[in-house]
Image (tube, rainbow over all chains, first blue to last red; front, side, top):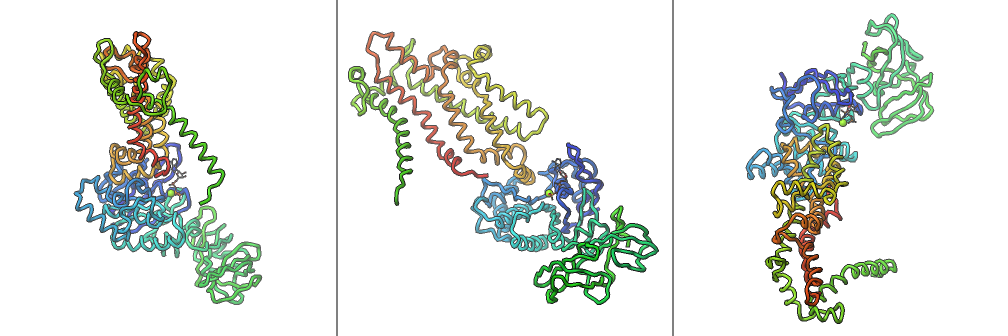
Length: 350
Length: 283
Ligand SMILES: Nc1ncnc2c1ncn2[C@@H]1O[C@H](COP(=O)(O)OP(=O)(O)OP(=O)(O)O)[C@@H](O)[C@H]1O
Ligand SMILES: [Mg+2]
């Protein structure tokens, strides 16, 4: 059994909303697990069940070899960082950090030692006497982290802790969280709907949709090998291009072109997925793109345009290529990196 | 700094308001320092006279009543105890019942809340006979407990605490739970400090409410040693008509001034919290 073990966990809210369906998942000790998925897919619900803030309708959760279904959140030894931090407004930073330790009956000197260590690690030593209302967003974020770290819990839970920060600070804090987690080595679960955050932070990633884990794996595995239409569309930025197609006798006919000898026995309606970055310009290739718009990001250009039948399509090319609006490009799929999904079930078939 | 006309007008209005509040008190105070005869013949006074110490000493220490034993000082103390008891218990009970109503999500929480709320329509004066019956059956007439207890349940305060607790974000409770707080420590470590200003404000209102009770102590007490200030005010007013002597107008003023002191003290002690809460919201 691994460190955290979810077995067939289901959550049905009192109003009948089924937020999590029979989900099973294991997290190893020291692992950084990220739950990613669109809004309302049940990420927070799953996390809150681990924390004990929501009852488990069905299934078992084991933490560190112990069934915790019925254990009170205060006894679970988990720490959580909330989206809006939930700092204690009437306590100064020191007491915010010390509160959980005090409740455990730890003696004063040890508390002071621990709080000071955590404060140093997070560079908030200068603000220990301040109230949360006198801190900036980033500083509050650190205090919230400090409050989690100082207790040395079995597991850290983060529920979209970065979504209230501006873009630059978010990237900085993202890095710091990752570094910190590696330094402290605590098992962590991080919830986000930002796929970049998910990719950069995760040791392993769980892509959740409609209360179901669609795919579980390392970020690269998931990026390279999405198992379903949903995962393919959700992971990767800009989004994968999807074209309608049809397979007959190992030949895929899409809009305006054909791919022969595909690696699948599937027959019928499919979706063909091609990542914008898996394309290159080559004469007389499969795909013809009429350019509408070019976004220059510096390192890359994002070229948006339409195929013959007016289908929107995106192509990502190195930033040093100049492409004019209105140009006609001929694009080749590199290394045959394309994905085929069954149109009715969304399952990958190649 | 240039003063704008609007500011001048605002200040004039404020000053008028202050005068409206302060002048009657000053007149009472100034009048309480004269001889009763002077007041009766010359009317109210604006300046301090020479009878200050004598009048106040007389009011505080002169024994009155049928038994010639109760003093005004004793009445002040009684009222103070009663108001303090009512205010303290009202605040404690309301805060706790609001806590239960908001945080323990049992099915009957809403009906129970409305039941509590409806008691606003049934003030003590309306239920005075049943209340008296209960208190006297319990043998609590002529006791501080009897004075205080029937007045401690407060729908108003429960309502205000409930509304306040409802604005406290759920995450605060959740992160406190994860930090190992139990139901009691969440109340003491979070709700009480967060509602400090609310508590101060409620305490002040409830103190004044308790202090100015008239009917209940009047019915409740037969022993003079439990008489309260407001009852005394009535006595000191009617006394002059019954007696043959001149009305003791100056002493009455002294009594009124003295009766204001306990509530004023409470406000002075609590105003720091109170005002802080009005000008800065900490949430
Ligand atoms: N207390 C509740 N009662 C009823 N339904 C709820 C409750 N909380 C959440 N839900 C529903 O459960 C589903 C999952 O909610 P959840 O909060 O887990 O989503 P999420 O993935 O965290 O979304 P977001 O990214 O927006 O935070 C949603 O459909 C939501 O409407
Ligand atoms: Mg959420």
